[in-house]
Image 1 (cartoon, rainbow, N blue to C red):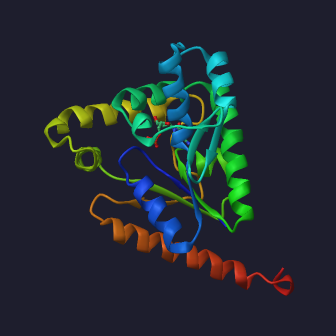
Image 2 (cartoon, rainbow, N blue to C red):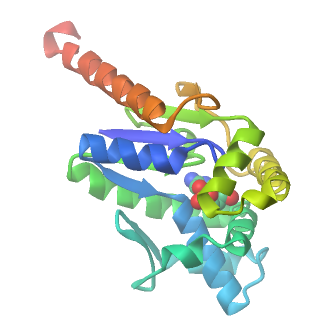
Image 3 (spheres, rainbow, N blue to C red):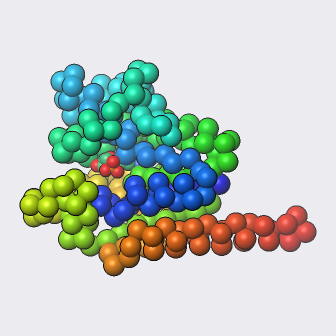
Length: 226
Ligand code: DC
């Protein structure tokens, strides 16, 4: 089973995807890490963030696994991938169509491997629309920009910077949803969940409920019923 979880920054995607995967014994794949990996390497090696062809070469060396993201076989540390500089650069490089194509291929490969192990919860921005349009369940999480900024500030211990974080989130939202290549939007058959006033447990419970509905519906489709 493949479950796609998409949504903007701070919608709770990562926490929800991690918890749902743990609850259901599935692999969790965080595709944002592939864009962050390319951004980190580009900053480290002085690659222009608009240099599509070079970024695509970097992307081809990225490998996504349930244990993290590798570049040329080297596991990239989570804290290096999560700095504000890498976040901003990841948003910029993710506008490059050529790079998206390469990383989409790497993400599909990781999902196929996980599927053979029983299934995966795959988290990102275009999983339901582009990467895995065949996913059995597609969830699109949303939340107000104020609530998303509050969560991000709490998560990173930067409560004093709420307004700056809210602005940065809105800038990234605009860039992510207005870009030509795979803009951030719910798939036509996605379930949209507004998490503004829901607890993490509440969202996880709802997703798990949806998974069992999908599984029940699938088990009703027998050869005789077709
Ligand atoms: O989810 P995240 O914040 O780690 O993602 C980092 C950046 O990568 C973000 O600006 C959006 C982009 N991204 C994307 O364009 N497509 C994905 N499937 C995942 C992330």
